Length: 102
Length: 353
Image 1 (cartoon, rainbow over the protein chains, first blue to last red):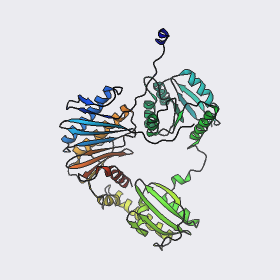
Image 2: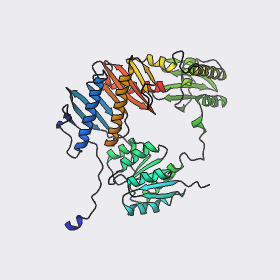
Image 3: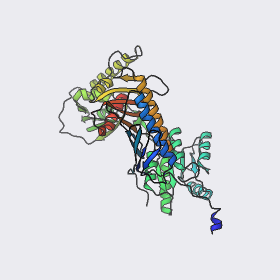
């Protein structure tokens, strides 16, 4: 069976949104975090990069920001400025939805 | 004329595709069933030919169902979308519905479930078809009021335009009262009739409601129509409105509002700017930020961006979009952040009206 399993197709997985928090420095490097390791590191870096850029560009537009909250139907991202870095909270939303058929 | 709808089935399991293809052939409307073994193949097929409905699996290699449906919803908003999956996780159900998908269905395990699934698909295929009564959707509010009055009806018309709500009381075919925010009577009626779009519902009659309007409905509707024509004529005379328009007056009354930018796509300067001397920098930041987090949302598969709240020591700013117009709204820093979302929706609705 072990030999045969080498030929079986790996099951595709879906990206599961997670709740947790992480802190990044001004370079976007994750300092500490509570997100599960299954959440892709590339996405964590992506989120951090976008948040830091929004803070930076806000200051350039004469809009100093202490906090930014981004709302999606499936996820809420709340980021607080930490002297150039950021403390970022992810909250996956489990919205009510129509029930599945029995 | 061939009126058979076309359905695209997407699943990475060829056996399941064959099986579902056979099942879908039982649909009473006898649609054409086409299949795609991957998300990329499905998107290519959608580019090539029009489809009425797509039935898509979620777990697929390379491009999963969420990614496929996110693109489909954006590029083909009229297309009906269905997820047929073995995934039972509630989070994915929520995210699928957040994308605007019409139906999330777990793969049927019994004949009864299959029958119910087919009934749902048939209903989705039928929605928006040529047959049936669709006149009400294209009627203006004036037409609806006239219909109620001519038929001597007694009812309460409840009209909603985003967060704005109004009510019109009709008794034995006569308009007896109106209510819109702080306004009442004729003023409320004129305000409601100035809204360009919205939803309405007929509530049960309230015979004891006090009468404040004594003019005939014909006279009132005529006055409203004239007032609307005049305000539109003034706005179109030289391309720029001579006097402040009602929505702007309403906007200026909103507590805590500091500025408002409305931005059309692809234009460097804001479509409308109120309350900022040099709006270009703010508009640029707003556009960049909306674009940045819209793209991030797609990569995270978290659904379409709803709105952004940016809180600062000097002022708060909210960013949102409605249709193709993007909005950047400035608020005093004393505004409670929990109210920002509702207040932003109100501003956007007022602007759109």
